[in-house]
Length: 190
Ligand code: HEC
Image: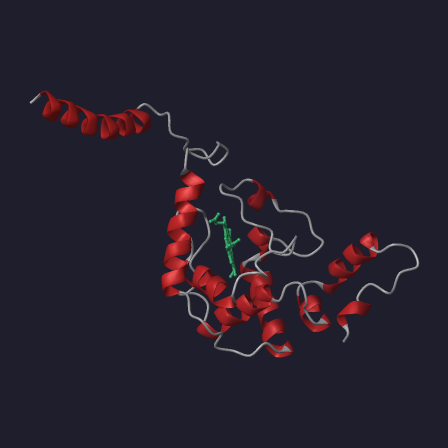
């Protein structure tokens, strides 16, 4: 009997604690606040598991200049405000979001993810993060084009770079190029 009462009290204390946490305004609700305990890990676990289950394996389109240029145009119009452009400052919108949209042309971006994973995220969005679902506004072709662009963001042909705003990319490269090195985009021409 004692054991049962203890068990029931023990079980009740968890939901009661959670209720207290949320009802007293202790949980962070502002975008400018810190993450909740375990928020990042749980959200990432749930997202990864779902993407693994549902993301298509093979890209429906080939990686070529035409698809990468078209992907760059989609990116410019629909993604850049949050995910940034090569050589440009993070926007005020991106800066103020929680969680922050990763800057996909800084560092490795999502070049280490299969394009099918990016396709799933762009099509379906990521709930409670500000990442929109684009499947009702972009065609399947456009979704694949922008996914291929991001999977190849570290090795884009000059035409796709130009479609992203070639001048800025060039300036950025010039800024980082050491004196006497090759012209900025010479290493992209194979
Ligand atoms: C309104 C802002 C916003 C726009 C516009 C937006 N995103 Fe996002 N996106 C986000 C946020 C915020 C995240 C981070 C979600 C998270 O932390 O789980 C994200 C995450 C992603 C990720 C996952 C990145 C990773 O590291 O796994 C991909 C891929 C992505 N977005 C692609 C796109 C594409 C493609 C477009 C345009 C078609 C786009 N996003 C437009 C806000 C945006």
